[in-house]
Length: 322
Image (tube, rainbow, N blue to C red; front, side, top):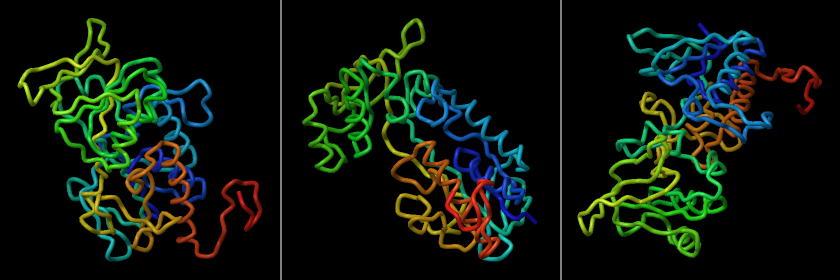
């Protein structure tokens, strides 16, 4: 029997583990097939506070894990295949059939960026191929970029990237966009944005030095393949929250994200909390995920301890703001 189990080891899950462990709750943290989450596929991280010279994504996650371990968090590799939140204690089933019991659960399984699934894409993630303009746009100052997608996210990413790039070309396989009219109008009025509609991505091309040089596409009108030259490619076709294993155990929205009570990390099931990208359809940043992990730990501790107030900082007095 555990006091708390954290599922997921991205910035949200590890921050929750740090706070829970520091509160003496000895959480068990279950890490899946990608310990550290999406940041482990990122190279330079320059927008996480506290690292003025930047830090490699895997290194940042390693620091977080060691910090959680320092305070007593226990880590276990495993794949969660099912949960039972209808009874207390809560039951978590791992691949192979083993079950774990816990009083509380923090869900921090993240959301996986959707990729095109074309040759040259995965090999160049973090080396010219990205799924986050906010994270990586700065590295392409003065460059030519491509954004693949036709929804609001693609329009938003393209508009943001024009702050750095000399030109941003939106690539979409149809001649009509799925984006809302206001987002389309905003993109079309931006003189730095060009269009390559009716093009189906075929492969990411690199030069002899292994640098991305463009995207090979099929022109759906002419039937001919073309090379759209660019220094970088941003894939903006959406994210898939990692909630399938829950099987409806908590409320999720129409996009598959876990629904939490506004201003908290509480789900519709008492003692079950959600943080990070699995409940965040808007921001999806490492720092916002970490912040929500802190919130989840504090919500969890308050649930376990009732009206007791824990001194999280080691400095503040009872009831004082930290």
